[in-house]
Image (cartoon, rainbow, N blue to C red; front, side, top):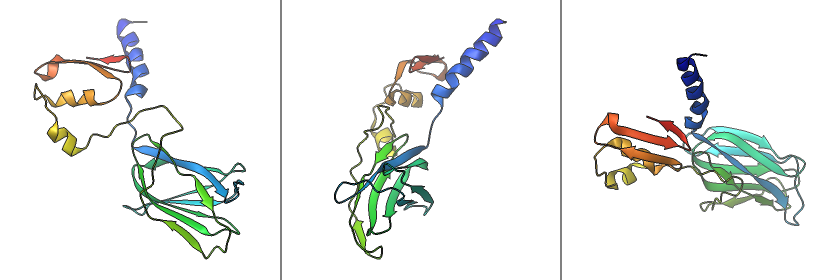
Length: 180
């Protein structure tokens, strides 16, 4: 195998590690007020900014997952036969986040609705991965000693290396996969 072919294979092996995702997952468990699991509950996840809709159904253990959902603000609606419908607004989904929203349904007619309008406190309990969104305000307030925009790469978890005063003096590593 030639040296260039070997370098190409090594480079392609690191490529998936450098891939970026713009989606997350909203998941949880649906139970009734006594703690019993609610299978076959219908889940509707609505992006409040774009009105895009994503459907799911709980499995026999009452679990649901809306995977590969674009980042943004969401409304969660849950309906099941013999229970009041449930709505939760204010769910914020970030990059690669697995937002857990557990639901407790109250017994009643489907025409009755329990609506939660406060922002949902989302705790990452399903994965140990770390994602980061760097907003415009944070970028403007950063002290960039070299005034080199490539220095912003070091705000992300797993990135290490050095940066000089020009574009050809940067060397960094992302989770051990180097780039020069």
